[in-house]
Length: 339
Ligand code: NAI
Image 1 (cartoon, rainbow, N blue to C red):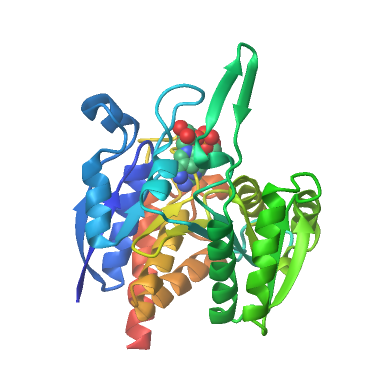
Image 2: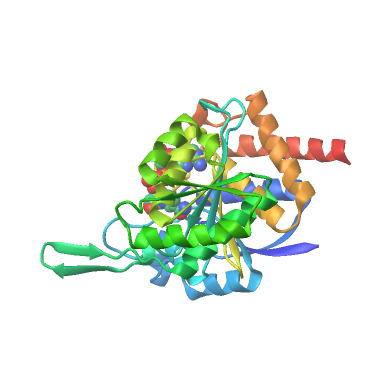
């Protein structure tokens, strides 16, 4: 079967890591008809907006996309492509597995999953200048979204054999908004009696993530806490170059690396494509291509265990193309052994 998938190469190192990922997917024997849709800073210059309607239409039609990083201006300028994508397509669950790779700097053998609510909170874009010198940002929290993300986290825990969900909040201070989300989560928990619900205040959760991360299991939280804790998690397992991400809704899913466009190394052939390849593994599972997903996953583990061909961000000498060629070789070898 051929899958039709939207590919957004993105800005900076995006096209380099996207190309590497496509090559590895092909080596795993998955047939894909890539619907390539540009978006980001460069597109804003040429088409007047960073996320033209054609990109959303393509994802709606294909229901699945792989996305490289897109640049966003800080302060003024246009709205983040990522935030707009998530909200326009109602991709309400951001899933980031945080798992150590062999031989990559990590204090523990970390294995947790962060599920972040993707559409509300302070990212709802409800900001205003009340008067000169006084700005306000509204933290939007609805019962519907709070229940929906809690449901997602519990179902994820059930289907992935994880016994605990930790709900992270700050309801001691934001009693109404975080309080509503906490109540909604408490109502969902009894519907999933095999999964334990643990509640934790966000500052305590940050400390536990550093000292005893695996006790958290599946961590579920609102948008901003999830954004910050996800990067903390990436830091635990070697940095942003390693962590995959998925944005999942009822009608579409967008898989992306969590790192940015890395302007300092863009175009130099130095980027580490691991994060986007790991996101592709999640995507292949989502598409039911389990054998290919497992082959790529094993190849990633083997490449890091051997540590012969790794990129400069973790002290190696390989460029993106050497890294990719080695991964394709390992994927083919693993497939031949399995077949
Ligand atoms: P960044 O993640 O682009 O770079 C931070 C540091 O990590 C840099 O030194 C970079 O060289 C390194 N790095 C990142 N990914 C790497 C990789 N795959 N291989 C090797 N080294 C890697 O973060 P920064 O500089 O804060 O953001 C740059 C731009 O990216 C901004 O415009 C920002 O808005 C955008 N961005 C986009 C994201 C997305 O589309 N998902 C996520 C985060 C940032």
